[in-house]
Image (cartoon, rainbow, N blue to C red; front, top):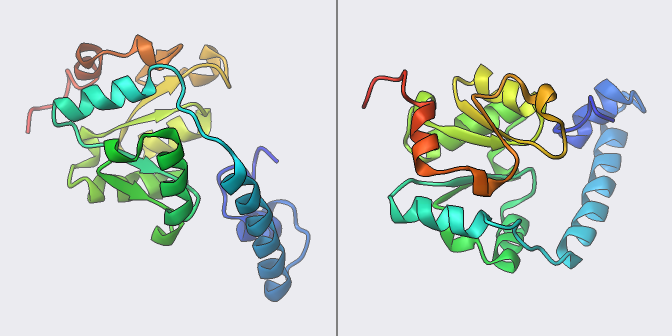
Length: 181
């Protein structure tokens, strides 16, 4: 299951779980998975983690563009953001409609949508594989500990316990070795 995390269901069905190699059957199983997930997703009441709305608001005040990366479709992503009261804080979205296969592709598409070179972007991630994917895309990574312990996120440019631990100064510090643009 951990190897399949972050993969499109069709790819996980064929390459990780090896349930079938028949493409129509794979599509059927992938669609059933998607519909079940979306039913649960639409009923869920989303609330941002403490400090998230304030942090995003601060970034917006200083003109730092923000993009949310979601495996879900755009409509569902907007619904979740609206429920959480965060929709107005994101200038761009990367969703299922963008066709990204991997987290690295997703991060690169987000940098294109934000009109920023990858080297001038930061990903907030809570998964070690996401941190590696960000670095593979030449994007800085801030790891939020919790789901995984700090030692599992050792490759991140910065590790924080909660979003409140992050400041604009510490964010700038990540780019101290980068040439200004």
